[in-house]
Length: 217
Image (cartoon, rainbow, N blue to C red; front, side, top):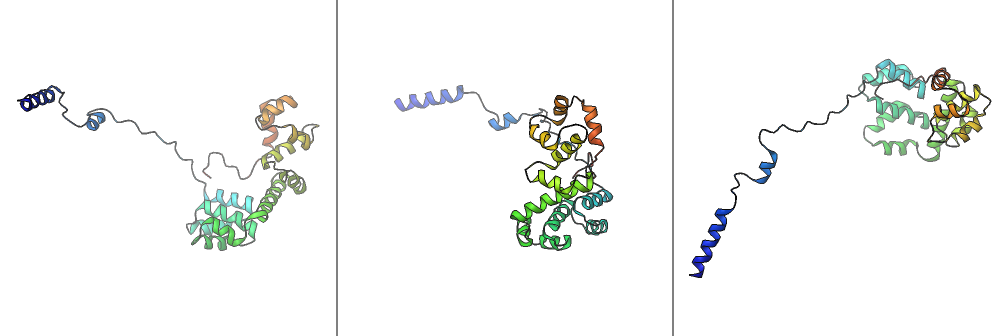
């Protein structure tokens, strides 16, 4: 008798529960509801043309334009070529030799094999920056190297050089007074009393030959 009563109670409870026509996960998906729009990625910047690649590599690393052309036409990726050109300057090995090693080795291993590591690599990178400061903007290599060795970025050295030419501030004084949170235009307004347009005009007299606005690099 008790068993009969218990069975009846269970049956009544089951029939009183709401009927689930489909699994919960199916309900959550929803039928006929619009799908969430996928976040659109910004369009990728246009890649450089061959002449632009030749310009950049010749200006930055002294790679002959014909070398760049030959390697790009063989299908070498520009990013790999750019890196190989830097390692070529550091190690003294040709770009072709370095790219041949990269076929079977990761870049970190290539660096080790050619000796582009440690203090030597650091010193050669500073030297290259100093050389380009002189080539591009006539800043004496010795002057550029002096500040680069103190940890100042290449751009800081350039701007301090330009501002020292337009004021009675020395490069030392400018670089010691300039603090990272304050941008250069604000610094000029505070110390030289010039506006942003004047700053742009002064710096614009010393263009970077490897800067290609809007280009994918």
